[in-house]
Image (cartoon, rainbow over all chains, first blue to last red; front, side):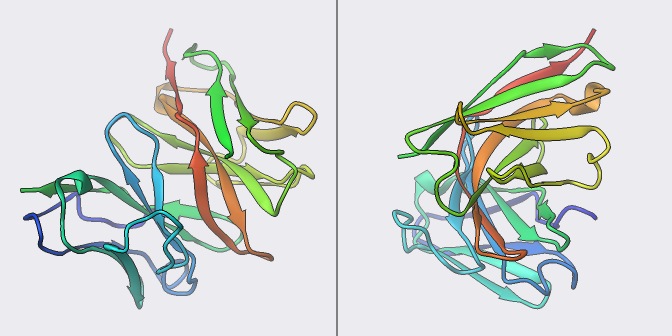
Length: 110
Length: 124
């Protein structure tokens, strides 16, 4: 099992939208709708932002949305704000009761 | 509201066993359909799933760590524990515990909340 693939960094300007991609395989992201996304500030614990590809937990801004196409899941953040600058990690069920995380994407708000 | 707190030695010698405890407060570790998991993160790197346990004692482990990992639960103390044997410098990381959603069968769908994490350094 290899980690899910994420770009190391993305950036966007305040007010714009940005998308963070997470690429897996037909054995994980492609076959299971069990992708979750986590936001992590430096020195802090991760926070759940999206689960089951596109569901948003209570309390998470509706500026955050998730989707999936084939073996790639995506997290889209609309109306970028300075507070969105953080690291984002995807996670997918990978069969046989195992999980895979992505390597993380650092979002910079310009 | 459920909170998790990791604890344990911050420094472990190579070849020894890393032992950590996660204490759950604000709710019973046995209530609801939840698993409880361990995840680690080397400095500046991504997250790695270590394994999970159900209050009944049922466990699943990352295949890459399975030979060295044991996760256990003490429902009377509302705690779960992690043991990792034969550690090397590669096991140096922040270790997190988290509650894991379970939607039945092989459906594990989220981690929430997370503990604040505990840093473990493997060094002589």
